[in-house]
Amino acid sequence: MQDYIRTLRMLNSTGTSYLDNISYMYYLYDSLGRLTLQGEYTGKNPSSSPTVLVQSYYDGYGFVGGTGLPTGQFTKDTSGYGRGSLTGSAVTVFGSSTKIYKAFYYDIKGRMTKSVQNNLLSGYDITSTVYTFSDKPSGVTHTHTASGKTTRTEVYTYTYDHADRISKVQHSLGSTSITLYDATYDNFGRLLTKQYHGTSINKLTYAYNLRSWLTGISGTCFTQNVYYNTGVGTAKYNGNISSMTWKSGNESTVRGYKFTYDGLSRLMNATYGETAGINTNTNRFSENVTAYDKNGNIKTLQRYGQTAASSYGLIDNLTYTLNGNQLTRVDDAVTASAYNGGFEFKDGVKQANEYVYDANGNLTKDLNKGISDITYNVLNLPTGVTFASGGFIQYGYTADGIKRRMMYKEADGSGNLVPTVYCCNVVYENGVAKLLLTEEGYVTLSDKKYHYYLQDHQGNNRVVLSSSGAVEEANHYYPFGGVFASSGNVQPYKYNGKEYDGKKGLNLYDYGARMYDAALGRFTTVDPSAENYFNTSLYAYCGNNPINRIDLDGLLLARILIYKVL
Figure (cartoon, rainbow, N blue to C red):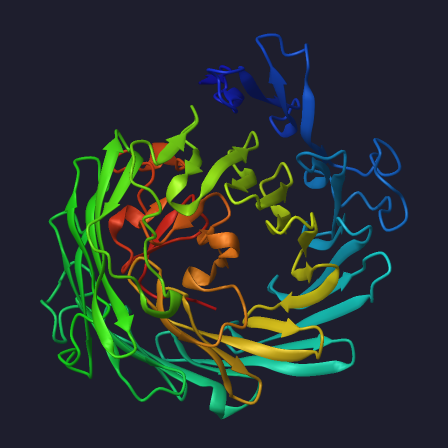
């Protein structure tokens, strides 16, 4: 349910389950039409129990020192450069009295030069930016503090070529300074080479066709060839990929898939094979959708995998039972399991209503995974996952939809909670700063060593390299995102570069706005941007074309032509 005022700005919208207890989101605007308050109330009377979730400030800094915002790192700027711009906000952490306060500062040209925000560890994250004459950042400094923890300062320095394209990115952390990557371009302005950590060992070269579609990535530790109207697959002239091959890590094996689609460009068959001809060891890791319903929901799916030390075969033969677009049951017709705990669908129960949803279309039970309850906040983001075994996972989001904290408890009776806290790009695990995420990978903070992602055409993290070029992790993916083979498991960011949560068998990718189940090829909640994709299921992943498209954040799918433009 959504109401609009005459100027077509949203006034309120139904948030939590309106069948149980009507809850509304309200939005208030200033005289210039700028959103100033966003909140929640229950019942038809907005003044009965309003809760402010997001408060936004414009033009000046009178809010500093008031409305609960602490002084110290937050200062008042009297230059007047913030006039007409967002200068601050106060964002509620769901399930807590804590707020994340932010202040934004600008120069005479209206460019943001500094941002300050507090974090959940009683510290601050301060980012300052210096610009070139063409308004591109030449330097970005980020300082992170946390109570009782080491202060960390990182600096990005950007160098541009004659065409104002990034040619070098340098990164320093404390006294350590390195070249994150160097980039060159071809005569058409397309990314030609990318060299990590200043060494040719970590170099990738990109190739394109006449339409500037990516056709190849080549390097010492990762190569990929993408075919549209050429290669061993059935030629496609509409932009769909007909086949692809790749080689990852230290392997000598060339792996590949041949793809077929239906008339709506939905993936039907992904036939696996090895060697450049994709004709050796065929079907070892094939993934086939044998039927869709008229709403674009997968009805049947077959998946092949490793069944023993040297055997391969069908590991999933799934039949989906649906009520409208909602999945209610999945039956697996094969009893073979993936070898050594490998990726597959786990058919935990056989009964009606294995999957249950609330009135907003959010998945609340998944009995096949042993999940007895999932709760959500007003943004339809999960707040807790309870397992029948007794363990649970808790999530802490701010009202702007950013995940700030995750805690899980094992079912061992200890009651101990293991927290993960996200402070901008610094990730803490169990109170210890573990990772500093960079533009091209991450730094392990225990030893300050740099690690780099080698990505395919979709941004899937295929290989993790050390700064010296050693392969630390290599992943091979099914078309819908499951990892069918890997060496090493040193970090959680995998398919599409999204964080994979395998704790307690949850086995979901966090896309930001929604969680994705690669074993089923479906999201667990309704698309928040469903009005833009009315011709397909609200739970479908990438319009059922996971080869040629990616979902950026659970809200927007994008077609792949060139994966990354600098």
